[in-house]
Amino acid sequence: METVSRPARPPVRALLMDADGVTQYPHRGWLKEMARLGGPRFIHDAFRHEKTTLTGEVDLRELLTELLERDGRDCTADDILEVWYRVELDDVMLTLVDRVRAAGVITALATNQQSYRGGFMLANLAYDEHFDHQFHSFQVGLAKPDPAFFTHIVETLGVEPEEAVFVDDMAVNVRGARQAGLNAVHFAGTDTYGHLRCRLRALGVPGV
Image 1 (tube, helix red, strand yellow):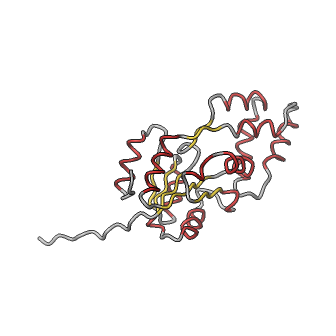
Image 2: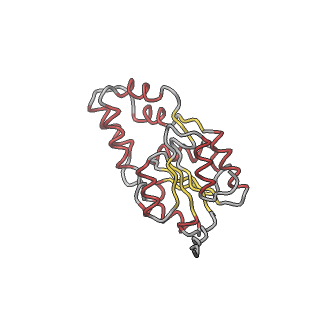
Image 3: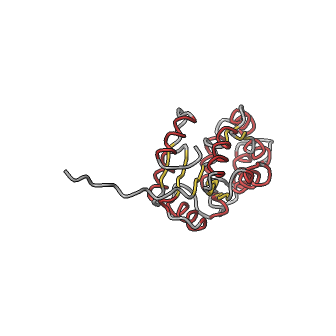
């Protein structure tokens, strides 16, 4: 019987990594501190409002100020934002990125961020030591899971969608990347680094 060979997978030319939940994590106690400052209703409303600011068209500080004034809190929006900035980089994950980059693959951070937190990350976190490019939603004007966010990135990098691999901890964002034609890996909270390396190897990502 004649066997039918599968077409060769295109070489991986770009690795895109999410930030929160993949390459960085909130500092312990940040959510409790934010609740202490803002009050019991604040957390839910603050995150709901943040979603409207991810493309950079709406100012989060103004929204936070309105919430704090509504609830009669004596802290400021900047006090809340300072807590929001508290993140720790995942050195193990960044070492993996370094290995992929050393193997000749373009590396890019692809993250949803409002302008204040994203601006803090760009100014203070050493992502430029690991990534060739950074794509923050507030700068791009598009946010995950919109497939257009991923299309913008691969077009900017000069690679075909099927030549890029994207990693995110949120399944909805993985689906958005796949809709744009990228290979995408869901790095769930229960997954280990070993799980991720196996999935990246299966996709042909070098250096892992």
